[in-house]
Length: 426
Picture (tube, rainbow, N blue to C red):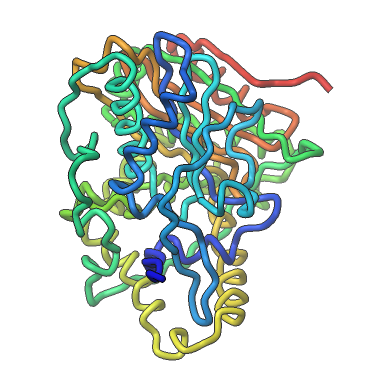
């Protein structure tokens, strides 16, 4: 009997199995809305053409003596009807142990991923390829292939499954210590329901507003989010001298700085913010603080030193020979003491997504959704497609306080917002 192939978790993925719980997995979703209802049988056929092309996705998480690892599971995930709530925790005994979901509802195709597999860039490549295969099968569309829409008739390249953290790690690391940040709080949904609010915004309006402050769209949105969280902390009635820092985790795609074709995780982060104890900040001051923090921290050298620290820990001789149960305890404690404790929430922007002109008539909308974080109950994600910026805010809290404050501030700055929600009445 032929033994199954396996691969190590990449450096960023190693923390997730130890940090996950029954109520929380690090999940995210990418989706595409088509012009016609999705045929699930054709969608399954499309997925079947991808299994061998995406070997690092069709795997199951296994527990070894020293590390978790990914074992080849060369079969399709079930094509499921989408539910009312995105990014619900995985039951790993379902779907044959696969760490991904393929879902559909009406005209929408969605793929959800456990972060041990990939990051937003890899997940988007998977979705675009899946949609391309579906359109080819259903409509006979001839779609060109490149590095973002893969040719499923070609074998996978070795570079696509590499751990780029190990490939590009340097020799110098930096201390990642930071002060704790303010955290949102409120009444949680009783059954783990994930509430989703989607704001559709003319992307040019948002870009013009950001340009008015001389910053990028991500910097502008981060500043608005910081201002909104500060409002909530003030509403708590905490004296100014006792208020905590308000910081936003902003993921950074490392492929912008290092040559990599990996479809696995290869992202880092920066945590721009302000300290309200120093006084009341104007919006212009918040924008400036975020802009200069991003300029100083989101550089190849700083990001390299940050992930080199993680790689050095992985290569530590004592850690390598420690049994998995001890590693789990250590990584769980590290995650609880650092992890989401250092930021108030997250803003992840996948940026502008484009499709070949052959696909554009069939795809009306694309979205990116982050599941809520372990300590921070609200997460914000963004993607632009077809002239529209789609902001998705997920939350496990019943009161949409941050979402209301954030979107209200965008409207006050002249940015029109169209809101949808999966809100349910109790």
